[in-house]
Length: 343
Image 1 (cartoon, helix red, strand yellow):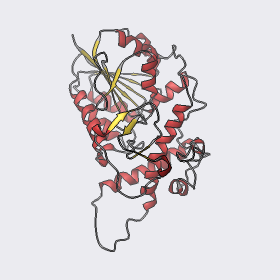
Image 2: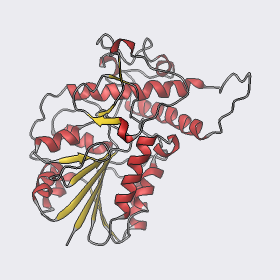
Image 3: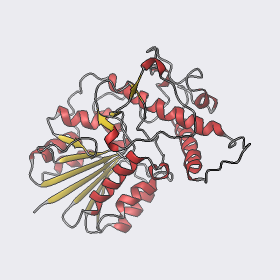
Image 4: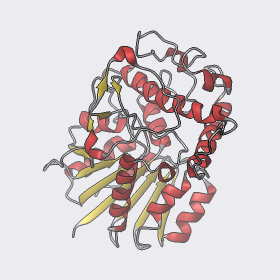
């Protein structure tokens, strides 16, 4: 019998990995401003990306390296909520119009998108080689399903920008393909989809590093899948298009060609699932500003699919939604349970 596995990963997966790899003291993916002053500015390589000098709009809205986790999350949510509304509003071309009030939020969005890319590149450079995580449930699970014939097809949809998943699979010797970005490898039954982009997505056009700047115009540069390649080195080059959508951003509202293509492929893969197939969901917050994108995947699946969610602090709303959609739903507190899935 040909079985499919569909995995959906959020920020909680990265948090769990960093904890088991004992890297959480150097990398913080909860408070995305904590290490902002350490991130180098691409032109001169000096730390200080998150500063009034380089990100004045973020700074004027209160972004600080010393702000607490809740305040950092709330600020990002405010910025993205405003931009979600902005991109949904009808565009006008009235002569003499001075523009929209509170343009600081759309300007801060542009700064945030570029800043986050370089923040996660900075985090990636902090670790030359991955330590073994033999005690981690995901580590053992990936190694097992790669060797087993139980699943003929494995799709991983991750909303994380980082490349820890790819580095983990590579470290374990598990072949994979970043779908739509790479030609499928014959030996790879794992396909990775990253609807919110990745620090590894490199646009074909590279500009002079000394010309790096954060453009604050209202146009969002776009790119099609064929305009990008996957690169795990020189990720901080001055690429024409930044392929990241900030957290809580609704990809569907922005109508990015790349994000839309990846989101549509994720939906196609979800629609193909049926009885006997499995879904594992891990580390998703189910915020009000981004839940529509996850709902799109969930309602595409057959209610006969076996669904498991791994989260020590799951969203009550997501729990309710999963129990209302799927007949075979189980919730777990930790990834250790994956060690018991000997399939």
